[in-house]
Structures are given as C-alpha cells and as structure tokens.
View (cartoon, rainbow, N blue to C red):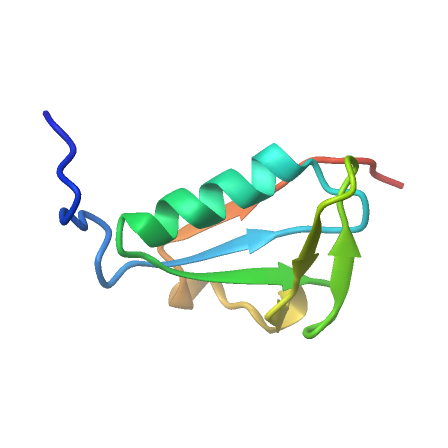
Length: 86
C-alpha cells in the first residue's frame, strides 16, 4: 500500500497522547504529528490542561486537556509516552 499525500485513513478518529514532565520526545511528538497527518483528531493530555511540559531533551509540549478528563468511550486510540517516571 502506498501512502499518498492526501490520504487520511484516520479521518474522524479521536486520539490522545498522554505526557508528563521529562517525557520522551520521540514517543510523544512523532505520534502527534503522524496521527494528525493521517487525519485523526489528537489531543495532548497531561496532569492539567494548559501546561507546558519539558521533554527529556529540551523540547516542550503544551497540554490541551487534563488526563483525568479523558473518557475511554470518547477515544479510538490512546498513546502513553514514556520518560522519567516517579
């Protein structure tokens, strides 16, 4: 199967990428970009909405929703990015 620039196989699908402080950038940013590219509606979730979190290598990401406000029934896909855990 060849990927075409205008194909959006995930159009209408809903996803969330959960991050925390010192998240692993490649495990968060790449899924966000690729899922959006494929047409999915992606939200970045953290402990609180509207927080800027630093990644392990210095990149930052803005959370759009609190993870506690997510509902499994509202999502088709959940990505939990790794990083430094407690």
